[in-house]
Amino acid sequence: MQLVYNDKEYDVVIEKKRGQKNTYIRVKKDLKVTVTTGFLISTRFIENLIRDNYERIGKMIDFQEEKVKNNRGFFYLGKQYVVIYCDQKGISFVDDKVYLSHDFDIDAWYKKQAKKLFLERLDYNYSKFTKKIPYPKLRIRKMTSRWGVCNIVTHVITLNLELIKRDISYLDYVIVHEMSHLIYGDHSSGFWRLVEQNMPDYKKYREEMKVF
Image (tube, rainbow, N blue to C red; front, side, top):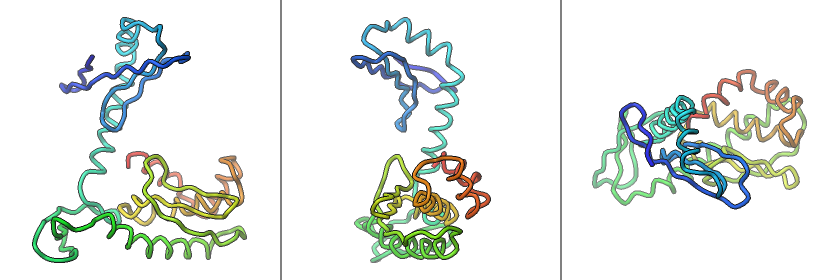
């Protein structure tokens, strides 16, 4: 089954699960329209559901298309670069171009830069945090669905390596967000007030990060 939107065809994948009571429509990162439903739901019902929700599905496709666009290519600290492969060792930046060899380990380089920068920003945000909290331990790893995680028992903050690709303001927001969890373990109104105390314009960054 396929759905045509803006003159482009998108695959519709139907996932039937035992015990599934409701039917959900999502557009995943691979731009496939995924319908999760129960075994007894007919194809005709799904076709009608897709037709009735065509505009909403279109908005989900637009959203995912924007995310794909914003993650395509080489990004570093909020700037996108054109990759030029050459025989040189290491990496160098000239205007909007980055020069590197074909066997250059980009992930290792990202992690090296992140270890230094993330610690600097953690120190900075910790020094001006409005509540007294234990100094958190820092871990960095790639995550697919979260920008950061805070373990309120061990006081470990884990930051997504992908943040090295974005402007420092987004990194600061995630750090403030996770440090606030050392006071509030949930996302209560008190939690968000604390985040706002330490980053008054956090809503701007929170919203913008949805398309990364």
